[in-house]
Structure formats: C-alpha cells, structure tokens
Length: 177
Length: 200
Image 1 (tube, helix red, strand yellow):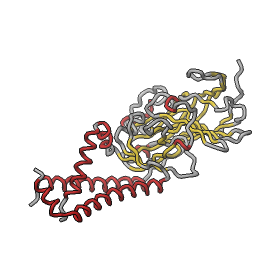
Image 2 (cartoon, rainbow over the protein chains, first blue to last red; image 1 turned 180 degrees about the vertical axis):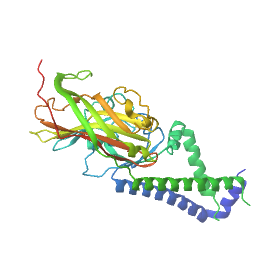
Image 3 (cartoon, one colour; image 1 turned 120 degrees about the vertical axis):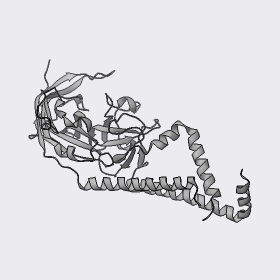
Image 4 (cartoon, rainbow over the protein chains, first blue to last red; image 1 turned 60 degrees about the horizontal axis):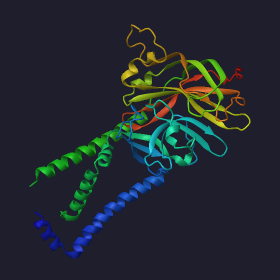
C-alpha cells in the first residue's frame, strides 16, 4: 500500500526529506506568527473565540465565531458583550455587561447572559465583581456557524488527531508540481 | 487527468473562498449603511427607595430602588435593515456619587427582540389590544408601566450621595454577519432625581 510512497522517500534522499520538513515548519510558524500578530494588534490574549454555550441565544449559538478587541485605556460600557475568564475556570465565557462601577482606581463589572435568568455572580467562583484583568475582550464582529468544526473536534478528540495526522502526512509526501 | 477527489477539493475550496468574500462584502456594505433611529421618550414614574434584601443567600439589608416607566420609540429603521438578526433593548441608569466621584452604570430592564417577533413589539410590557392595521404598529416600541427587571442597588448600599440619575434606552444591533453596533433609542427628559429613603 505504502510501497510507492516509500520508494518516493528513497528517491528524495535526506536532503529532500529535510526540505519537506522545513516546508511543514514554515506553514506552522507562519500560522503562529499571524495569530500572535493579531493578539498584539487587538491587545487581547485570544482575539478570535468560538461560542461554547447557549447562554447568549438567540444572539450567539454554539459554534459561532466572535472577533474581539481589547483597547487599553478604554473602559468597558454597560451593554458591551465581553469575553471573560475567571482564574481557576478553564473556559472563557461570553456574556453581556449589565453593571459598571468606576472608582478612581478600578472598574467593577457585573455580567449576565441574555438567555439566563440571573446574573453571573455564581460563575465568578467567590469574587464579587469582574475587573479588567479578567476580561479577554469585547465582541466586535460575528461570523455564524463556522466554529462548529472546533466544537466537533473537542467533542470527538479522535477526529482532531486523525485530521492532524492526515494533514501532516499529505504535507510530507506531497509531490512538488 | 484529474481525479474525482481533486475535482471535489477544487470545487469546495473555490466555494469556501467565494462565500467568505461574499460575507466580507456583506459586512462591509452593512457597515456603510448602518441604520439610525430618532431618539424616543422614556418617562420614569413612581421611583422609590426602600430598605430590602436581594434574594440571595447571605444578602445584607441595603437600599433598593424600584420604579415604573413608559417607553415610546420608533425602531423601524433598524427593522428595515437587511442585516439585522436581533435587537437587544436595554434601559440604563447612569449616575455619579457626589462625595467619592465614582460613576455607575446599571441596566434596569432589557428585552431581546429577534427578527421573528419584530413585527409586533407592542406586546412588550403588558398586553395591548391588537391593532387592526397590521403593518402600522411594526417597529414601534410601546412600554406602558414597565417595571425594572433587575434590582437597582448601589455598591455602597445607599443612595444618599446620589442626587440624580440619567435614564437612557440603548439598543444593540446584532447582525447576521459582520460588525456589532449600538446606539441610543430613547432618553428621559433631563436627569431623574432620586427621592429620599422611605422609612418603615
């Protein structure tokens, strides 16, 4: 089954093989570079997120993609949809700000999901208010459904490894045309 | 020459590219044609401050304000925009504390209006008799004697240092695809003064 591939590897030799590996690394590195550049540009640790829960329905459903920005020195306003992460909690949460209290040192925020009955204090894990350091960014743009791929991959990890393996294999054994 | 797999690959990548370009163009076009609305009216009635507790375990007794309000505004321009999936209406009170200078912004009432029920928002608040005209009431927001949905309280536990508050009805426009936008749908005529605590 793989005899032709093995034969091609033989023909490539060490140099060709190394060249293919370099190609593969370039693809990975440029992807990482673009992501980190976007992080710097938007001042957010994760400028693109996928909605994981239904607490903002009917605005956002599971699998929708959100684009975030987090401009420094601009306070969050009531009505902004923010993405926050509580220290200790592992997934970021997308909810709307319903209270903002600005003192001369900090800003305290309270959030609520549009589809939830009560506010989020239960989700905060002990703290009373959100502060700027908890917030990853404010939602600026919206693209429906596309992120469902990542949810599928999270739900079925085998799919993720299969996809990674296939892509890697294709990159390595692909013929230059 | 070309295998079926290659043809399929080409076709799907082409389709994805063009769909993405189309979605990008739609979001840019709707950004240039953002709808605007005329600012409507919010009337605040029966604003009172009482001692009370939140319905939460271990809640302390504090001053809680409650009120009734009327809203009249026309959101038809938002409805007529093709890239509108949902409008989120929210009434905020914004106020400053005189001594500490802290500024506060609190949502008192909100309402999700999806495109499906946009045809008749007259059911907001209490039920109104159905109009015969069909299209006439479309996009008109009429709230009569609405109550604040969320408890209005101050982090300090008291409204003593707060003379007035500004009441504003905002909208947040959720598109099918593209950039989120927001604006003011209605305001109260001037700042609303906050009354003394009612003692029991």
